[in-house]
Length: 209
Image 1 (tube, one colour):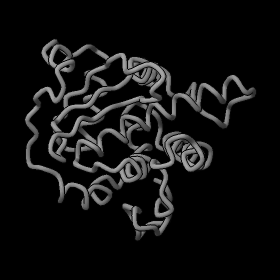
Image 2 (cartoon, one colour; image 1 turned 90 degrees about the horizontal axis):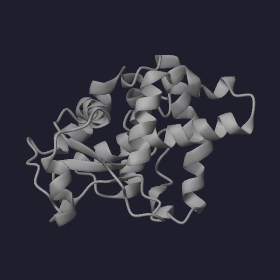
Image 3 (cartoon, one colour; image 1 turned 180 degrees about the vertical axis):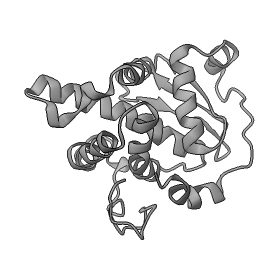
Image 4 (cartoon, rainbow, N blue to C red; image 1 turned 45 degrees about the horizontal axis):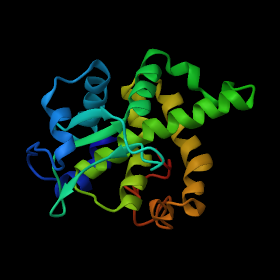
């Protein structure tokens, strides 16, 4: 909707091109094989968010780590690819097939809300990792910028603009506050707010989208 304005700051800081080389030995086989259908879907969203051509692979991330995505950095710079957990990849495909099934306004029980909760985190993950690919190393920055682009990721996956913005609001109100008190408090920032230092669109008050 306002993607060009939203990314003006970050694109100015992004590298002109990204060379994709394995940053870790275990990633070489993943990068060498052809992308799956789910990976191509994730790559298409990441490419539109970053205006680059990042490679995305679905992988079994370390159990118990709590990680939904990983973007390797070498010498302080991203290397042009990121990994998503297999669950995130399958979630994105499920959302693409039926986005209306994850409308929190239509949930009638806790089970439905839990499905929305998990799905919104998966959509946020691809937006979050996309900002790492753009060179933003700090988790709090990638998390905040990603949340402001969550609506766009959801829309690229087939949701209406109204539902996409509703999901961004859900993340802001229901999930983002939990970052502050979780075991990963470095994903939260007091400057991630309407008018804060991490606000990508300070002239607009349609936070976070």
